[in-house]
Image 1 (cartoon, rainbow, N blue to C red):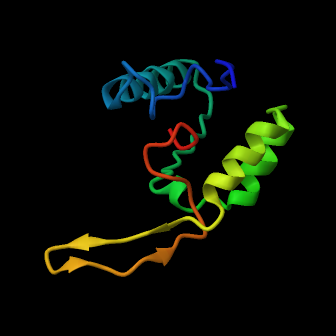
Image 2 (cartoon, rainbow, N blue to C red; image 1 turned 30 degrees about the vertical axis):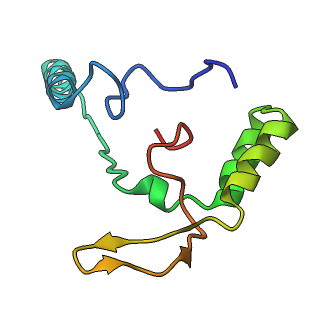
Length: 112
């Protein structure tokens, strides 16, 4: 699928070598710049915790097509998610198998 990425340079989450301290520093620098210029500053912080657990798979397949991913790869990903199932292991044992109909596989390249 290539190495094309649309991650903006101000993205800190899921980025190697970037973390909370860098985000805080950038935030403070921006606040100081606007304070010094006596201009209003409006910021939005979005927490996407567990976002990939909720991605509708139809949206993933649509996005792949829109981005020009070859149809054979779209079908391959679709096959990977069709009839996906899992078990839950706990201290009392392993659950029965159940279907997983929404979300992306944890650790998948499709869910960074």
